[in-house]
Image (cartoon, rainbow, N blue to C red; front, top):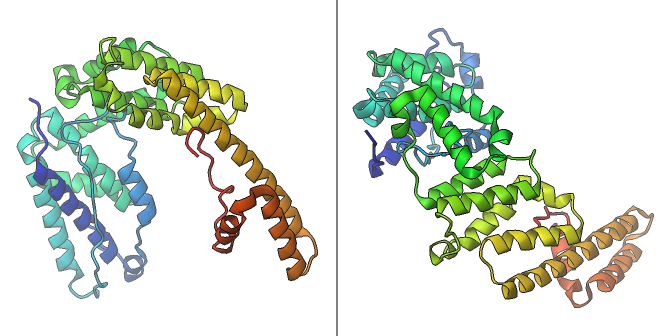
Length: 375
């Protein structure tokens, strides 16, 4: 049975996240009865790390090849709470535990008897791992036992199979990338069926064309062991397969700009670009854009723009090198500023005031990350 997303699901997941994080802010370790005051006061969350792990999870659905009907857009907010005293903490701890159990039952209760519903609990498990890296394992088992006592073993077995699938996917990513897209999809489908039998079709339902294109990009994103030619070839065949050989129709044209930008700006592709000469990079960019359906006239315009930006970057890097030399010289402030002003004028002409204003504000445009094909 395929389960459809509900608008209320996101709210429920958000509520779970708020409860978990609030509990962490209060310093409650739900499964530890003899927690010392020092441990309670010292409990902290790395919010930035948690954001990254929740927003960019190494998900079981990562190729989908990626999404499940129960996958949620997790949006949590940290409430403004004051730290409680030790008095009453046990009561509040129990209250949080009960709230978590109720939310688990509300979100997953109707589908918990299915593999799809059990697999969806992966999101909650990852949240606990982020919020309570030391205690998540015991907490997770305890909450499952309270929320779904009849299905604990089944849930754990399902998640174990998902972890096994994830490990296989990561281990074989380079090999999958080098297959024709249709063969790669079939290989992944067979692995899922091997692990989940007929339930695989429910856990990973058929994607829309847009979803499949995003999935292909997801697989490419971390493919550092393939060449730029292999990446382009893979994406080309993916587009043809997804659109039955007709990816240049208008149905694809509407989104070509987004897909082009997504492909070009991936870290793995940018790393390839960084190893190329300008001429090699220009040829690769033209090939990618042609694949996406750009006209030759527009390709010429983009190539001119890329060359202009390349020249500006090279000019800026030379300027930064000379600027560093001036700053390292033993000069008084007046002479140094005079030299820097002349240097900016020589390299940037009428843009000199803009460059100076940026530097005075602490911004150095040629120290930022270079994204080939964009800036």
